[in-house]
Image 1 (cartoon, rainbow, N blue to C red):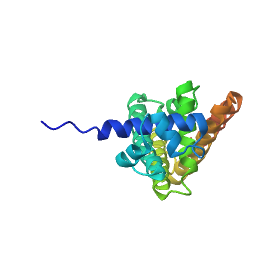
Image 2: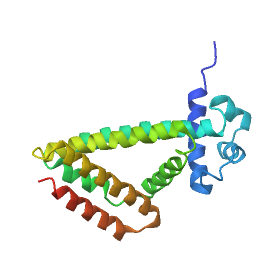
Image 3: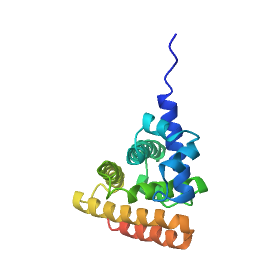
Image 4: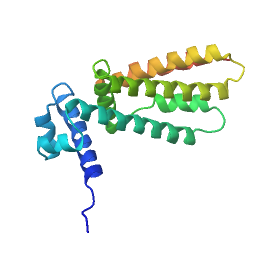
Length: 192
């Protein structure tokens, strides 16, 4: 009887280790040696299961793209039928756990590689498009009289505020995050 493949498990272990390395040293300072040590594997094993450093980073980006997609599905399912946009803003700008803050740090590290790695840029564009698509749908459901152009512009402003609030979380600038939430609510009020 053949042994079951360890490829999926090893891949996840490598990506988990990369997340730990990013949190400990940052993505720029993470070498294959450090990653292999953290994953408790030899460098050749890393290369066998995923590839070189850039390919491993791209694999983590793809995993996070899937994770963001699942988070959207969960969030949309949770939103109430009435005042969906208000509830979504509460979710987007709510206080965060240390796990969420760590996820933000990892997400920002991946974002920093988008200029250098086209695969990550494509993932980031996909995440941005999905965010805006879902946000515009939620805004349209609550503000059905607003024009599509106005919905799109408000969604762009909300997304910008959300990204800024996420970048402030690791710095514990919660008063600034609250201002961004208020700014978002003011922007949203222009829809109707």
